[in-house]
Length: 352
Ligand code: SAH
Image (tube, rainbow, N blue to C red; front, top):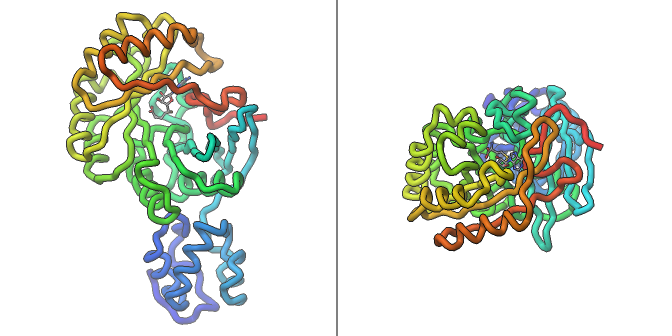
């Protein structure tokens, strides 16, 4: 940071937005602007607790300095649109500084408020069952663009966010640097427990190990979706470069390094991967693995004609896994009516 004492005339020395900075970094920044150190703490509080969208909003700051700093980018995105599903799930379309639109979803349950955040504009993985992938990939999100999604939901619900899932648009482990920084900020600056944060990945070779080396206490969810390599490759093109055995080996390393259990997500597609033989194969694959299986009955999207299995079928699959001693739960996605459920988020679509 460039340091100057002439506070009234300075312009920011870097265009890095303030959101995403720690209290120490914010203190360095205010001091670089010729302000006393305690203003760093105030700035931190206003950014992360009081919803400041510009420095002009921060009424405890001297008026002339506020005005001089009006152009400094805090890094908040505008709400372009919001829609509420009958189950009270709220989908937000957020407009980024460069005009791209991303989606974030607020999911209230009892005392909890979960935010499903996006990590990219679009997604390059092109999984066949996912709406985001159908729209292609535009760019990674910056740290502040991830943190902003959580603040936006928290402010709109007027309730503290309790859980975060990186299950919106994008593949978090292609944007691991910014995702890890966002996780640290959400934890340290907004106060969300690492154990209440889940990062979901389809698996990128080498990246699960690299994530483990950050020693975060977050939950890693891996999108498995198939009980063997050939079926997985049919559904997930990128699996061609990443054999199931290599993916599972990396997941085992994750458990060893972090001491955290891994969740395996498994979409249930009627007639395709939801038969008795698949349940048996999956049980075999995960035998002895310290893991949890999360079954996700398929949420329909326009472009493909996969079917969601009946409840009976879902229960049969669940029971079969349980009988093999596998910890399993079923996720009936929220927000289906507003295209806000898993796999239904897309960059270009404007909600209603
Ligand atoms: N790229 C990350 C995050 C994707 S969204 C990943 O692949 O894990 C989170 C979960 O929703 C993933 O498990 C994803 O495979 C799943 N999903 C995608 N499309 C879906 C659909 N149409 N129905 C149900 N789940 C879907």
